[in-house]
Amino acid sequence: MQLQDTVRSEGPSNNTETINKFRSLAGAPKGTEAATAPGSLTREPDFGPRAVQERGSLLVLALLAFAVGGTSGLLGAAFRLVLERSDRFRGAVIDWAHGKEITGFVLVIGISAIATGLAAWLVRKFAPGAKGSGISDVEAVLRDEQPPPPLILIPAKFVGGVLAMGAGLALGRDGPTAHMGAGIGHFLGTAFRRNQDDVKALLAAGAGAGLATGFSAPVAGAVFALEELVRRFDTRITITSLCASGGAIAVARLLLGNGPDFQLEPLPYSGFGTVPIFLVLGAIAGLLGVAYNHMLLGALAAAERLGRWLPGEVRAMTVGAAVGLLAWFGPGLVGGGDPITQRTLAGSDSMMVVAGVFLIRFGLGPVSYAAGTPGGLFTPLLVLGAQIGLVLGTPFCRWFPYLAERPAAFAVVGMAAFFTAVVRAPVTGIIFVTEMTGCSTLLLPMLLACFAAMTVPTLLGDPPIYDSLKRPGSAASHSSP
Image (cartoon, rainbow, N blue to C red; front, side, top):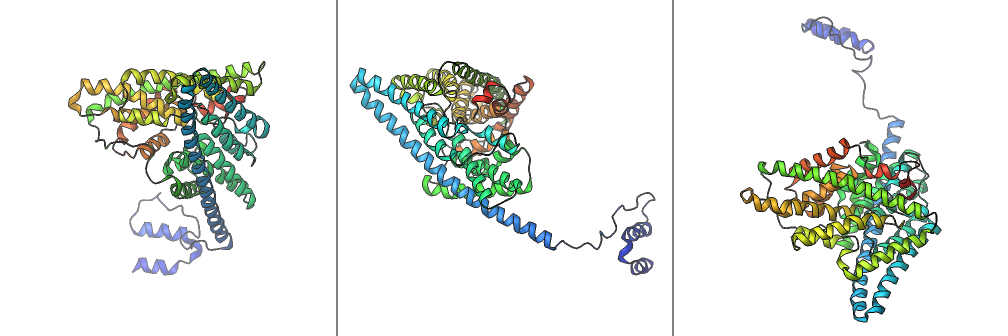
């Protein structure tokens, strides 16, 4: 009865005192009085004009994100289809040229050199920012370190990427699709007169949507935008990234189909006895990731030094000619490398072949990236990661057959571990590989291996590759994506 009288006697103007009386009557000890601000007990949800305007703004942003994602998905899917056709065309030309002996040999090298040089010329002439991957450029724009990409970058990236990768350079579709998606996001954001924060959110979301399209991995694309590009979980950017990646994959699957990029037999869950070997796999991937980063930056620095005497187009043609020479003797060694990854996951090649291809591709990727043409890093990384895992996992499975582990499981885990070692985005790497292979039984091994793969380079003081590529004043920054 006394408590009820107290409630009736207090008006809304002194809510803090009311709470304290409640606590006193309930026997709460002194010194624990409420610190609630006056008016907090009677505060209703904000339905004022400003709150309604903010909710409306978020709705418009989400609708724009769907538009950005759908456009990025359509463009990215078209890019992938054209790349597939260019790969088949290159293979057909090489097969035909082998019947022409010396003439065919010169023709293959010449076509590769001309296509690579033309890609470099397009970049220099129309959009210098279109060279390389473009992901570090997107990060720089988000940090106000450089201006946003012009609209001309999109066709330059598309055509230049098809020429360079069609010529056989060991580059990935990931960077071009992400960079084009970022350009679409910035264009639509500015066209609809959004504020600077919303334009940046759409730019990041477009990059994630393009990346998602490149690998048929919608969740990974959205997570990459948050983990690597903006490096924070902001509500508006999160909503925008999810909308864009979802819209991109919904459209892209109309052209590309619904299956994962790689076909893999069902794999069982790994037992506790495999924990040490997956940690070792991660540590080895970490060491090789450090070596790969240094090789990539060294190739870019060497290309910059050559640029003092040779024009960029000549350097690119030299790289293209070398790739054409390699393609003549081993057509399956060049290009992005998806067929190599698929063969590695299936265990189709012997260990000697896998090891030899690994050594060639370990050097081919950095040399190709130094050509200064459009092209990404992720696809070549997945090739090397799968090979690292298979080479390490195959003898382990033979020595410890009672653990019932398969070599393909190590190849899958190796893909995520090597990606993490180079890029330093472990969550993205795990989700990427899970979505690309359709295998969800190896999450724990991937977590362990990525932990080791991220720890080793960090302890060695090796920065993530995209931090190195955008470092001001470095050689890499001048030749970076």
